[in-house]
Image 1 (cartoon, rainbow, N blue to C red):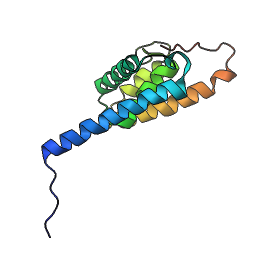
Image 2 (cartoon, rainbow, N blue to C red):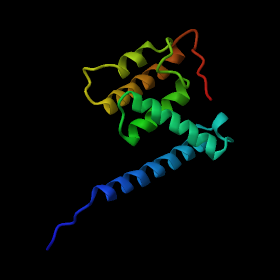
Image 3 (tube, one colour):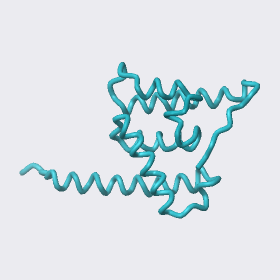
Amino acid sequence: MSALTITAKQMTAYEAARFEDFRALMVKHLREAVGGPFAHQTTEALLSYVDKGVTRAKSYGATQNDAFGLFITLMTELGDDFDANNAYPWAQKTLKDTTVKDPNQRIANLGAQCSFYLSNLDNEPEQTTRSKT
């Protein structure tokens, strides 16, 4: 019995199709789960937002759809520029933390920090206003 061989061209096509599926799922997530200003945007506008988030996540070395999706979700929670915003110094520190070798893991760590940050907003006298695009 011969082994199945997948060519580089086939793998590239598979990865491209998988990424398009990811983009479509993110549009649905933004529109239905995040809602608010995203609920009534065109598909093209939402795809552009997704692509912007993917590009920004890639600038930190991310390579996986899970990391891209989490980065985009963080953008919706903290603002499009959260990674450069001085209001979130912990975000910048985590994204640039070279002691964590895997950039996808740095974004996962950032997601956990964001959850902690948001859960503690209710305990602060002055809440930070989150911006959404």
